[in-house]
Image (cartoon, rainbow, N blue to C red; front, side, top):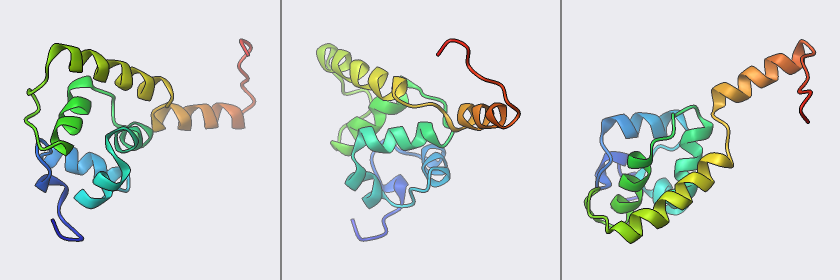
Length: 112
């Protein structure tokens, strides 16, 4: 890969994932590689992409140069735990915008 390889040059990542990464401000395959699968996927969630386990593990497998479905059961279980941690640690951008708007008009969370 060169310095500005397209996202679709990574295995398992097609035009839809490339568009999602673009919306997240990630424009090259090298940026994804430098971030690593977990941070790159977290950026997708934070930019509003709906979390999906298959998309996550397809990214992980692709960065390893493997087919998206080349996943042993034990490995899938481990990746599911990582995926759940990534998702639970982040709110999608849409939720953050809603919360920001509610804060502006004085709505507070009484459960805190």
